[in-house]
Image 1 (cartoon, rainbow over the protein chains, first blue to last red):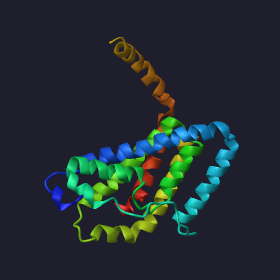
Image 2: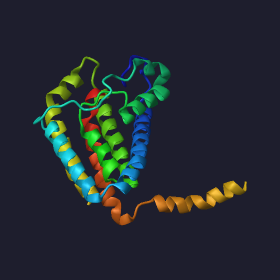
Image 3: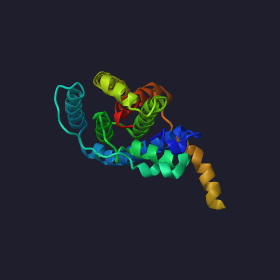
Length: 181
Length: 46
């Protein structure tokens, strides 16, 4: 969508990035507020045990050891956003991707972040996770823009997805532990 | 006008309360990296 022909000559990537960040922050703030309540009523040890168990299951899924469906709104962002121009359209597309509420979710790692925010991550940490999430999605999108619309990028992604997702799962867990110690 | 002045005076204080302890910055950076990894891994639908 970021290479839509109607946007030729104008790059929507900046607006896409701002939208990504905005969408991710909105979700993170809402989760942090709800999490603030959960964190105040649940004992710390219980929250950590719960997060550890969920993280183990999600890691197993990302490594392909188990298979189950995760909550996701299985549809693509409407093509109509391209008609809104590179600024508004790019922003809206990014916002949708940032919230993740109207897209597919190939990985369960965003769900793990959300659960971590609900259970153990402090407010400022939730904002950092949101910022990083937006940056990660932006990097991948920006990298894919250089490819033609003949599906080459999707084929490449499909070829290395299992390896990349497993590697990213390890990074999420290690960096998450470091960040929360 | 008074409300604006009050807001301007309170803003730096509120901001300083929101800013993290500098000793926490590496931990927060690690969380940002964790977020980036999750965002990168979730990009197959882009």
